[in-house]
Image (cartoon, rainbow over all chains, first blue to last red; front, top):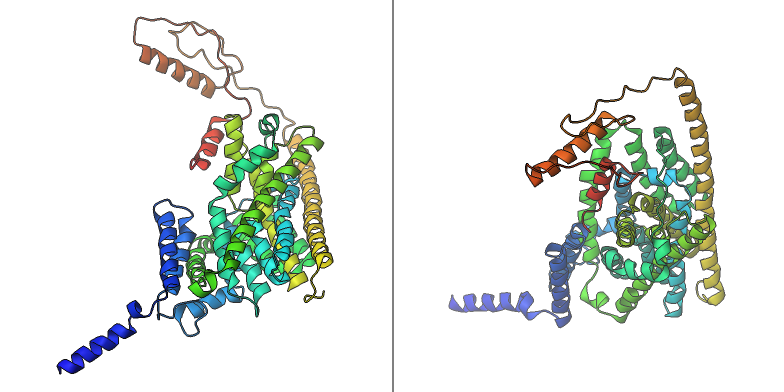
Length: 380
Length: 129
């Protein structure tokens, strides 16, 4: 009897995680705990970072088989929503119900800033090609510059299907980390590219926008963008469906569900499964480091393009546009707009740029969805 | 496009297409939204022109705020403004205690184009910083 006892204890011990781990798994678990610390104590985007980092922890448990690629595991099935491009558009539905396009409708020129800030995507695409990534991989990395998590995951999922799918995790982690770091990354670039005089421009108050305009807006954007770039239709379509539900004011119950329960459920699934793509064998590689560097470059370039285009608008409007709102053209709603507000207020505390910056900010969401559509249709 | 030999030419082509399409899409949106805005503007201004024809008489000028303070004319000020100024003066008098007298010589508006509630709203939204 004692033999059986010691035998089974030994077997259990031999089959336990303690005897079967790879040091890289431990390294990943440490990284996951670090990210958990950032999420819980420092509160960096906790709604996303917490599920992502715990997913990372789950995926690197020895022998547990919880990685997103390990067929049969719980997270494998949930991951299909990422792989098939189901979660990102549903997140967009929720974002649509929370977004007020009013500032953009009141000042349509903001659209141009939202377009210019997508420059980060395309310049980074060149960089990624030069670093030896395939065109599909380059497109997926470059889209980090759109500063839009769901768009990045959607594009990477579409472009990398059947190829180097493991990269999706690194791309998502890079995209969300940089979005959380927007308040640190953007201000130095914004200050370096503008003069004090430009930063202190006080913009005219926005005109009030009628309800009819707000209702017509999502329909027009959906029609135009989907006709022009059909591959962006699922992102833009869902975003605008959410927005129409909000602005129409007749489906309050649906709006509540889309912006609360549905959005939260999808955020949990998306976060955990994206985190769980970062198994040690695919994450601890040079490729990941390159992605992290290129992602940062994409973010900085996007910010710079936005600010520089803002300067152009400053010149052409005879000093009526504050170039600081240009940096908000990288999506990252509403963080990037808040950064514009903050940097503007540093120069002149009575200057309120927030609502002006919301225009380019929400235009950036549309802009990066269009850019994603273009990349998917050219490279996909 | 040839994905196997993706050279500099293909890269630049992709970048250029991307830029062009993104700008094209958003420029068309600018034009459309701008046009709709103009149409809306002209419609509402026509409406308001029609409705504002029987011009209302301006509200009668409110009385001077506090009888204790030097009598001042409050012409053109709304009740709310008068109330706010009175409250501010009372607050200062309370802080300073009795026995001191003040004369209000001028009252300056801090900022022209933003109302206090709007400001409060903006502050609420930007609090994390």
